[in-house]
Length: 175
Image 1 (cartoon, rainbow, N blue to C red):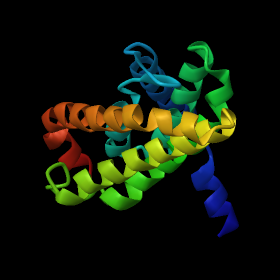
Image 2: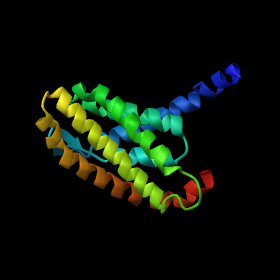
Image 3: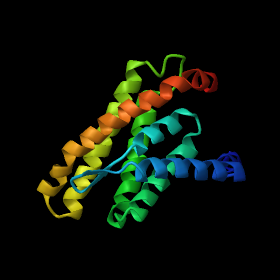
């Protein structure tokens, strides 16, 4: 049994390549459309993460969510946020996966998918708010970013639906 578990956890060249492409996708959607908000910037990277998670390569998408977002922090001049971003993006993606239960022909329009997106964005906003309070040693500083983070979450939910709806038939065949 242990050998079987080890075999399933092994990363192939295909897995690594797919993860690299997904990481680039998350990085670009996070790094390019920078919309300034208090203590950072808003972007469309989370919509990209949600779409990737729906494509069915969960392990690779989870890695890309963290790596692409962390790379955007590093290149974007926010290296202080690399650690928090790892934790937050992982928690956000896991929240979405567990709450959405991506299966069935109606998952795109299912109320549970919208609920999962909202919960995941709340996890993201709460995480960055809390880490902001710690990193800047000020609850006020952390809270100052909350409205922008919540707006970013709403924009990412709308962007997710704009992208996922045309992919719905493809996704239904994969699930």
